[in-house]
Length: 114
Length: 111
Image (tube, rainbow over all chains, first blue to last red; front, top):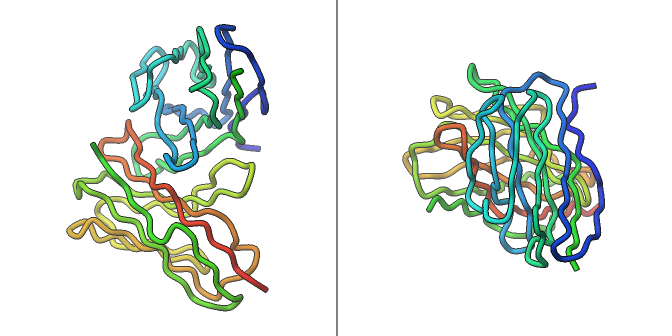
């Protein structure tokens, strides 16, 4: 089954404790990206990757890191989480070009930073 | 800063009604526009994708139109059903790296 898998689904942590949210897709998509969703602010893009070893900032990259060492995986790293990073996070992937750019989303990770 | 606006923020209709959701964007030079559905506690599902060269796309009871010159897209849902209840979001991209989402329209279809 074609899917984007995020883990964990829920995460509660404390300020300053490094964490990683994993994202994996099995569709051989070139493009992957991370978003956060906050009430009243909608979805905002954190980082994106056009292919392996190619990443760039979205609109709200501060406090986040990413890496793309393999085509299927795109982890989101919070080196020193703060309470303002409490949010619902989504990973998404897509082909690029030829009209095949439908975004496929993971089920989300609800993060609470205390 | 690119902005995407969706009106109304919430909509409640009786089952069977035809309805229109609106999406507007500030810069008309889009690469494509997508409409998504989001159910509570779940991820987004892409419903329709309209390329910049297209005027509309259809899938079942859903029809999405695009008018780049006016910076608008509409999602038409025919013969609404309770199972259509969800939040509907639109998103635009200009060069397929960054995506800009509206805040969504929360639809409730009453039996």
